[in-house]
Each structure stands twice: as structure tokens, then as C-alpha cells.
Length: 260
Image (cartoon, rainbow, N blue to C red; front, side, top):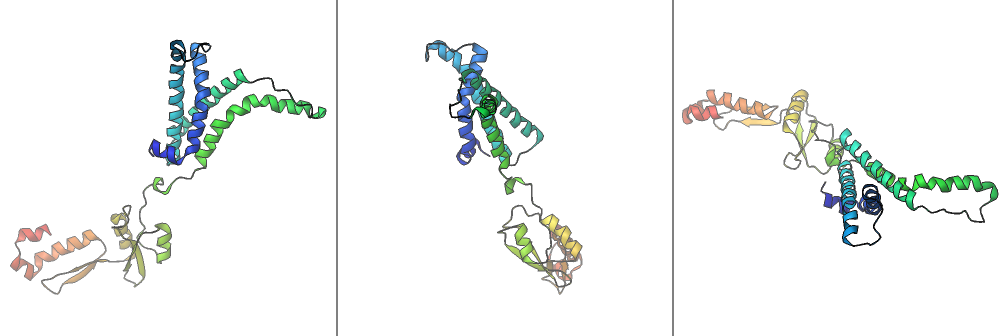
């Protein structure tokens, strides 16, 4: 999936990445270059912020691109491991920012005295819970998306189905071509001109198994006619008949007959 298309279709991941970018930039800059310069937007401040911003931006873009790939169906172990590493990096950088800026939050006088220990524990746990929200929500959102049909692998057409409805459930919105087998049963195949994923070779093998012979050859030079289960069988039969057909031998050079 194109990254711009993902930005348009999945704004949640983009918004989460943008929200994490500021805090991640601060954490990376502080860890690598020390305390933020007091004079902002000067040469020294830009020298301090630029390296950290570039690294944080690369992390966000990598997480967004990996999320797009996973939503698009690319769920290999390497891809999943990469996404979890990006999520862990986001969590750590958010935690560092909150751990440095988190003020002492006093409990209100209305909190019952008996609840103070539990309430204080929950308040203090925010140091660990708050930075978890962004990476966890991105993980849940990414893996809650179903794999699209086009990413579920190539579809090989089964050759014969007892009725049209079963075939339509498997390949929706694809016109059906009716054929009949030797027993007179109606069989249906997708139209290969309308279904680019239809594989005629697979259908030929299945048709042979059920005895259907949809490939017809009627010689225009004599009364010979025959049905074949596969396209290659019809071509071989046509070529073999051409070598013995009196009308063909009399009017067509042997080289043309051999060419089929």
C-alpha cells in the first residue's frame, strides 16, 4: 500500500504518530545532546533539536509504513518484529518525557480517606500507563484490521461446482460459463476474460477428473468431430487429424498441417 494512500485512509495511525513525534524528539535530543538550550529558535537550539527530530521522524514514518504493510496483508515474522520494535521505542520515549515532566498531582479533599492508598497507587501508575496508550492503541488498531481479499493469496478456480450459487459465493461478481459433463450435469466456471486470477490449467485438470469435455473440434474438410477435456488435447487432436484428413492433405502443405 502506498504510504500517501495509507495516510488518507488510516488517519488514526498518522495522528498517533504526529502526537508522539514531539515528545520523542524531546527525549532523543535530551538523551543525546543534553538539556534544551534556553534560547529557542537560535543556531544552538536548531543544532540541538535537528538530530533528535530526524531520528524521531524516521521512527514514526517506519511505524506508519510498517502498519500500512501489515494492514495490507504483509504479516511475516520480520514485519511483525519490526512493528513491535517501533512500538517499544515509542513507549520508552514517551515514558521518558512523562517521567521528566510529570508534576506531583494531589488527590482532592473529596476522595474518601479509606480509598487514599488505592487512589494514590492508581495516580502513581499513570507514569507507566500513559506512555502505553499511543503504541498500544496503534498496535490494536493495526491488528484489528482484517486482511483485504487481494492480499489473501492468488485464487485458483475449482473447475466444477454443483450449482451457480456455490461458485458465486467463492468468486463474487464474476460471470459464469455453463458447461456440461458426460453425465449431463450442469457445471459452472468463471469467465477467464472477466477474472484475471482464473487459471485455465487448473480448470483443465479438474474437468478431466469429472469427465467434462468442453473443447470441441469440428473439421471443416470432412465429417470428423470430437470433444476434448483440455485445450491442449484439442490442439493435439486437431494436429493428428490433419495428418490423415484427405481434404486437408490435398489442399494444405504438410508444414502448415504440422504447425497445427
